[in-house]
Image 1 (cartoon, rainbow, N blue to C red):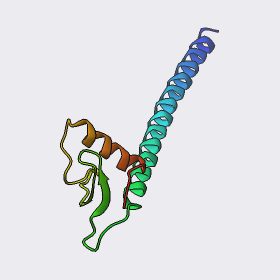
Image 2: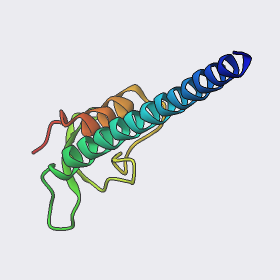
Image 3: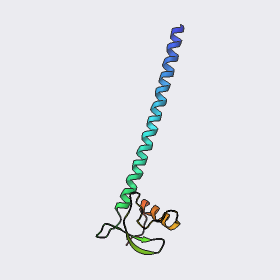
Image 4: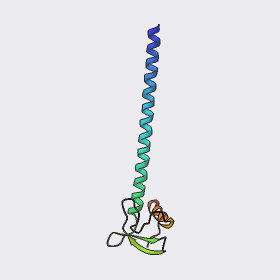
Length: 103
């Protein structure tokens, strides 16, 4: 009977290991899918902004409360964006979330 117990322990540990690996892979793919969905949503929101003839987004600047046409960078921030400024941070967040005021 010792061979049977060894076989049971081996099978149990092997199956448990396989289950843990599967769970890690599933979690990883779920995270990747969520990241891809978020990226798609941001890109869709930014591409939906009205543009001028030069391809610049027509936004209302939160910092200076004026209409502006600004190019968006690869992170969908207006060219006039200043890191650390609360109005600029809010503007970039609004562009990503699709809530930016346009003209």
